[in-house]
Amino acid sequence: MEFKNKVVVVTGASTGIGRAIAVEFAKAGATVVIISRNKDRLDQTLSLIRYTGGKAIAFPLDLRDTKAISKMAIEVKHKFGKVNVLVNVAGIYHSEDKAYYNIAYPDYTLEEVMETFEVGITAPAVLCHELLPVMQRGDKIINISGTFENGAKGWLPYYISKKALEDMTIGLADELKERQIQVNCISPSDTLTESYKKFFPEYAKEGSCLVPEDIARLAVSMASSKNHDNGKIVVIKKKRHS
Image 1 (cartoon, rainbow, N blue to C red):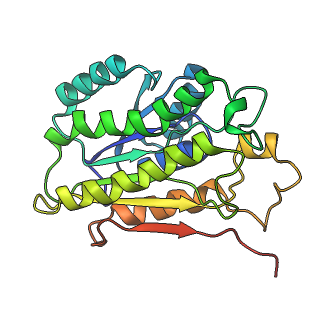
Image 2: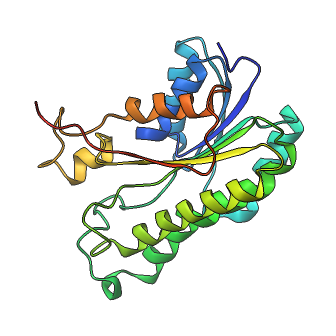
Image 3: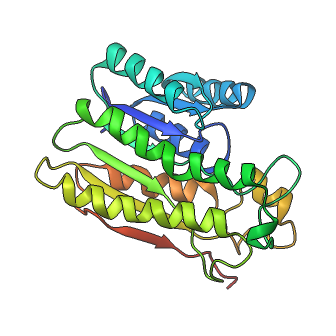
C-alpha cells in the first residue's frame, strides 16, 4: 500500500486507460480524484473503486473549460492540501459517431481541431499550473501520449496534441528537477479500450493489442518512490501473436 495517504488526480477516468489507472492507484491505497465530463461513466468508475475498498472523489468536468479546471483545482487544494501524483490521460481522437482518423486536416471542423487541442494539451498545462503549488519533493506527474507508428497523416490534431504533451513532459521535467518532482510520459500503442473496439474492430484483437491494465500497472510503477526516471517517454508496443 505504497500510496496510502497519497492523493492522485486522474483525468479521462470515466473509461479505458484513465479508468484502469484510477482503479490501480486506488488498489495501491491512494485517494483518487477522478475527472471526466461524462458523469454517468465517471460514477461507474467511482463504484468500481469503492467496490474494491478504495477511496475516490469524482469531479464531472469538461476539460475544455479552463475556468472549471481552476475551480476544481481550488477545491482539491482546499480539501486535501496536496497532490502527490497527477496523471493526464484525457485526449480526444473521436466523437460519439466517428474516429478522427483518415481525415485530411482541412476537412476537420474547426470545433474538432480546437476541442482536441483544448483537452489534449491545454487542459494538462492548466492542471499542472494550478496543482504544482501543492506538489512537493518526490511527487510525480505522468502524461499519457500515443504511439504514432504510421506518422501524422489523417489524424493531425490528435498527433499535434500528443506530441505537444511529450514536449511539455520534457520541459517540465527540466524545470522541476531542482524541486525533485518527476515528470514522465507513457506512450502506448493500440489498446483495447471501449472506443478502440468501437472504431477499429478489425484491429481490436486480444493478443495483438495492449489492455488498459498494462498501462495502469506501468503508471503506478512510474509513480513509485523506487522510480527515479525524469523526463522519460516510455513507448509501449503492442503485443504480437506468438
